Image (cartoon, rainbow, N blue to C red; front, side, top):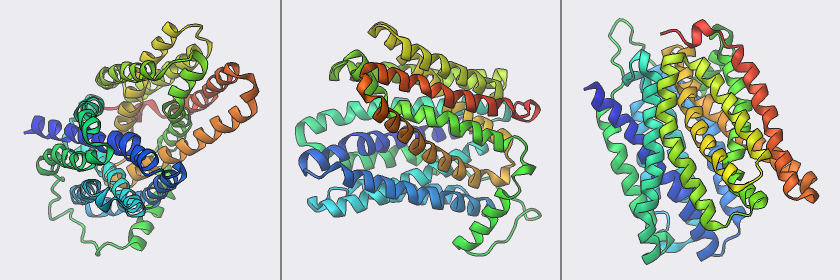
Length: 407
């Protein structure tokens, strides 16, 4: 039964990628800008609004799930919201209505992820947190490849909008096993807490009480600080790697696609390998190794003299990317008590969003200054990301080893 639950949980990561790739990254934005001739700012603003809503409400909803010891109802509700609004994105072909539906669908998908992460604690053996986390990420990267293969012929035959309905259906289909077979933990009568119906004020008070007492979660503050600085660099690479490859090495569209596929392949296997290593070596030690790997990646990418070296960097970046999410998720479970999982993962998501904003602004402003240097300016910008990783590395070193790696 446990193996079935693990497989069902991992399949949700695959399901999530149908939305992340087809809607967020590819076909919805192309439908808006290329078919409907809508300026990119409308999509950027819609994405920012939905992300801000998740950032504000996620920790509070997570707090309420901690109070009620219920994760699954939230997962089901927000998954259904996302899937349904994805299916009807292009209904009537009206742009403003489609943008509203996108905001709702993206909010549902990102919020559901909080409770998906929290449910891992219910199905993963204590000494296999890294491996189970890695299995989920591997399924996620596999889902990205499947999404490309399934929807490519639909786009070629019927256009971008024709992908929205099958994307929503496939998202729901692959999410169903998790919604059916993964269960919330049963709380016996002695430990069951009767709570009032949900209100944001009640949940926010509970969340504030937890945050104001983070000193009782030894290592958590340094974990958040380390992850924040690390993700500032990692999210920047995710956003601008293809631009860097074009500006510095002159890669064309086909070469860029090949590079992304190449990196994704290594991310798939890196997820499982890093998950296994984190269980074997300890999650804190494994995260330290990933930070070192990223530092090598940035140094090599900034100094690479030819395209073959850059493909080596692509492989190392994919391997490191898979490990970053896998090990961070496993380490988080080691640092927080079970009754605070929901709100902490809500806060973890919030840190991820803020780091993406800070990292992209840093990159953009730096290149604004270094623009006249051409390719050299891009190399200096990539090299500067080492400072973020080194700062995060120092904070990760401060996490007590006995807490982070105890089984």
